[in-house]
Image (cartoon, rainbow, N blue to C red; front, side, top):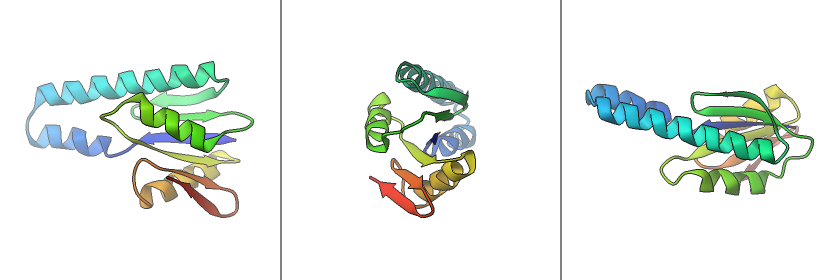
Length: 121
């Protein structure tokens, strides 16, 4: 199983920093995202996930069996300022589709794709 974890509205925070010409906020957002993604990645590794990709505000990982509700609760506790959505599927494509479905259904939620979508709130 694959999981695609992606930050919610982080690009908008970055865009707003540009629009407000706020260098300090831009640096703050950058550090906050980097630290949070690293913290999540380290915890995933210690829980036997294989990290395939980690960068910007996203992580793609895999594990034989993924407990989506447990993963969602962990991600929610990683940082109180940022939220992340999660897509889970049997392939990279399915995980991507599940993530897009989660993001189109709200923020700070997870979706699984296995021939149909299931949301976890």
